[in-house]
Structures are given as C-alpha cells and as structure tokens.
Image (cartoon, rainbow, N blue to C red; front, side, top):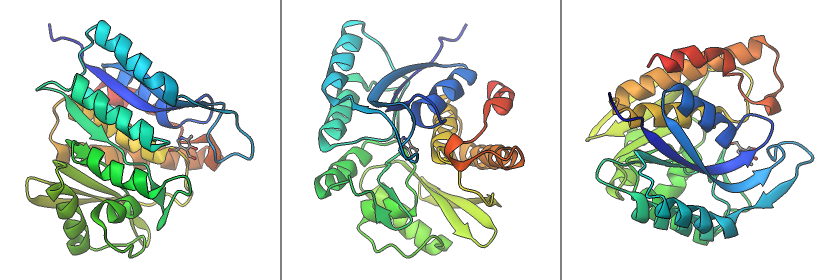
Length: 275
Ligand code: PXL
C-alpha cells in the first residue's frame, strides 16, 4: 500500500472565517494526505473584520521545526502562505533547507499584496527576502501585484494579456521557480490563471463570481498544493483548480454568504476526495 503523504503548511491560523490554515487543513486532509501545521500567527478571525485578536507566533516557529526534526518528520510538500515579517521568511527558508528531500515539493503562495498595492506591513526587506524564497519554489502562485513585485515590473492593472503574463512568469521562473501560476487575471466577466512551466504557457479561464470572498486565494493554492503533492501535471492541476474554485464561489454567492465568511467549500469536499 502507498505511504500516506504529508504536507507541512506554514500559514496563519484564523479561528473563524475560512482562510489560510482553516482552508489548507481540511482541503489537504480531504485529498488523502496528512496536513502538519506550523502557524505564523494566531488570530480569532481574519483582519478583514473591524475587530480581531492577533498573536504573532514568530518566536515559536523554530521550536516547532526543531521538534519536528527530532521526530524526523518527512514532508512530501512544504507549503507556505502568509508570512508577517522578514524573520518569518528566514525561518521558512531554513525550514526548506532542513526538511527538503529529493521528493519534497515546495509550494509558495507569496502573499504580499493585491490590486496594485503591496500590504503596508510588507517592507522592502520582506520583498527582497520573498524573492529569495521564491527561488526555491516548485510552484509559486502570485497574483498580478505580487508577480510584478517579484519580477520588478510596473503593475499594469488587473488585466494582462498572454504576452505580458508570459514575460512576467518567465522572469520569475528565471529567478529559480519551476512553475509559475499568475492568478486572478480579470477581463470583463472572466477570470484567468496563467500557468508557465517548462518554457510553455497556458491560460485557464472561468466566469468571474461578482463578489470577492476572503480566502479564495487560499482555497486555490491549497487545492493546487494537494494536486501537485499527488504528482499531478501542473497544467491539469490548474485547470481542475480553476473550475473547482469557480464552482465554490458560485455556491457561496447562491448561499448569500458575506465576503468575510470566506468560501463555503464544505459541500464540495467529495470532489477533492476523488482526485
Ligand atoms: O488570505 C486571506 C487572509 C489570511 N489570513 C489573514 C487575513 C486574510 C485576509 O484578510 O487577514 C490573517
């Protein structure tokens, strides 16, 4: 019988309001893998709400890693998401060098900004450290804002054509990332993800859901992370994930969910168990 695969998910834990680890954990479990979690911060709920409790977890992260080394844990995938300081990015880089083996996939969601703006908490030093972290990625999933920052290119807006997407992805790939997926390319009533891998590029498109749910990006990167860890071809993985996320956002809209509640993926777990 095949050994059960294990993913190390490094991200924040927001107790309510589906995002980051509360999306990654059930998604990866549904796909038949163990999800070990290394929290970067603990929050009562995500920061899109007016009020939230927040505790930074930087000082404990290396202690998690040290204990996992003593247990000799083996990870088939290391998956990082929101990182709150340059120190956290350094810890993740060290984690990769300590735990990466020949068969470990590195999936990096470089959460840095959106809509042409880098988050105010994201310093120049963090941007340059993220470029370094990105160089280790087997798969990286920047949106247009993040891709332009990683590639040192001007942000052109939320629509880019295939030629621009290819230039951006090629540049990030030349820095070391193997497969680059530029997410959330908006064009009228459609939204696309551009995959670049092995010198080839392909756009995958779905209809846009006219409401933006927090954590949609986390659902996208978690499903993709699961498929990549299962050794699925990255083009097929993005095609599946694009369709899956669209189905879940449309359902969330039909259920009249509030944007802050995140995407209601619970009813769609069965599809993940079958991939
Ligand atoms: O990816 C969404 C997300 C994750 N984690 C935290 C957030 C948000 C979005 O606001 O605040 C803490």
